[in-house]
Length: 364
Ligand SMILES: NC(=O)c1ccc[n+]([C@@H]2O[C@H](COP(=O)([O-])OP(=O)(O)OC[C@H]3O[C@@H](n4cnc5c(N)ncnc54)[C@H](OP(=O)(O)O)[C@@H]3O)[C@@H](O)[C@H]2O)c1
Image (cartoon, rainbow, N blue to C red):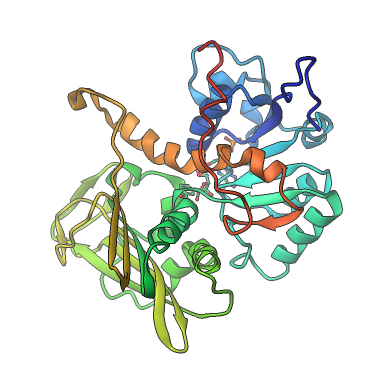
C-alpha cells in the first residue's frame, strides 16, 4: 500500500511489469514517464532475461535500476500496488496467485471479463481477487478501449438501433507478431475449419463484446461470430509470414450482439496483408464508430505518428504505435484500478480512464 510523503503528495503507486515483450516496451516507457507511478520490479519468463536491467530488455538507453527476475515470490514480497500483466498468454493460476497476494492487475492479455477463458478459470480469478481484496482490469486498444469509444459515440442520440465499432487496418507490419500465429494467415482457400479456428484464436473479443454491451446497458444478449476471408492474388512478400497466391491474406471477423434476435451492437475487425487480395477489401486505417440512431453518428479515430516530418517515420515506430495504443489504456487505468472494488472490473465499473496531465514526466 502506497504511503503519503511528508508533503502529503500521495506516494507513487508501486508497479511491477510482467514480461517485457512488444506491449511491455510501451507500458514501461509510460510508467517511467509518470510521477504518480514507480517501477519497482519486473518479471522475466525467459531465464536468459533474469538479472538484466529492464532498460536493456525494452530498448531504453538509461538504466532503470530495476532488474528482471523469474522469482515470483520475491516480486510479490515487494508489495506492489499493481502488476502490468502483458505476457503472450493468460495464465490463470499465475494471475490468481498475484491477486491472492493482494496485488491489483491490469492486463492486455486475453482477458477483459474472463468470459472467454476455459471453464473454471474466470471463477478462479474472481475468487482470488476477492480473497486478496484485489482488482483485475483488462483492456488494450481492441478489444478494450474500442468499447469505450463505441459507448461515447452512442451517448448523444435517441432511438439507438445499432452500434458498430470497426478496426480496419493493414496488419502487414504486425505479421511476425506471435499473437498472429493462430489466425492462420496463408491457409488454403476453402479450408472448412478455418473460420472456427479464427473465432477461437480471437475469442477474447467475446469479452470485448460483453464490455460494449455493459456500457450500452445490456448484460443478457445472444451472440454470434461471422468470419470471412480474402485471398492473395499473387505470392506476397510479407516479413515473417509465408502467404502464397490463393491463400488467406485478409480476415474479417464480426462479433455481434443480438437482442430479441435482432443485431444491436458489433465489434468488427478487418485485417489485411496489403492490397493484393480478392475481394479487394478497403481498410480505413483506424477505428470507426457508426451509430444508427437519431441523429446518426460516424466517429473516426485516426492515429498519427508524433512527427512533423512523416518522411522520418520508420516501420519500427509504426509498430510501436500499435503497441503504445494497446499499453496506454492499462497504464492510465492503474490508479483507478487500485482504488476500485475488488474483483473483475471493466470500463463499466471504473471512473473514466484517461491520461493524467498532472502526473508530469520525471525531470520535465
Ligand atoms: N487488446 C489489444 O488491443 C491487444 C493488442 C496487441 C496485443 N494484445 C495482447 O497483449 C499481450 C502481449 O502482446 P505482445 O505482442 O507484447 O506479446 P509478445 O511480445 O509476443 O510476448 C510477451 C511476453 O510473453 C512471454 N512469452 C513469449 N512466448 C510465450 C509463450 N509461448 N508462453 C507464455 N509466455 C510467452 C515473453 O516473456 P519473456 O520476454 O519474459 O520471456 C514475452 O516477452 C498478448 O496477449 C496479446 O494478444 C492485445
